[in-house]
Length: 147
Image (cartoon, rainbow, N blue to C red; front, side, top):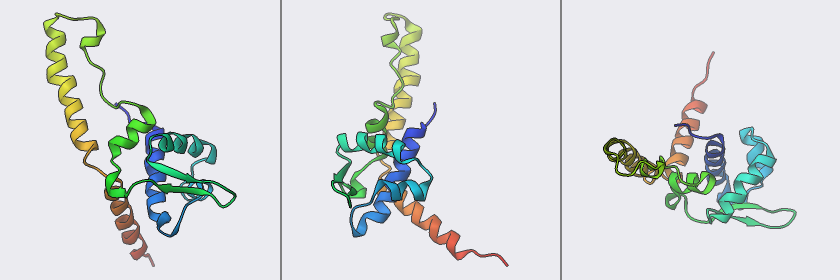
């Protein structure tokens, strides 16, 4: 299972937005420049995030984006679902093997268990948690210097 580039870039951009939007909206070009992501790609990502209600846009020449909710209310699960759709493993039952004991065992012991653990994890990590980790990392690296 892979964590897609779209989800990684989306979360990276949202961390940046959360950090830099305290004084107002943030332009995509600023986010793109700070994080080395193309503006065109971010436009697609933020379009999906806006449709999901995670961010809101400010129109006009000095426009940009803001979080639609406090960072503590935005989960990684919500972001990944907005960008990718469901992050769950596909059901074994839907593969046409109904009545098969092996398929039922795989569904229960593997697929359902993995989906439950992913839900527990991704629904309990918030943008605020990611922002805190980001700022802690930044602070620790700025304090280190070499002679």
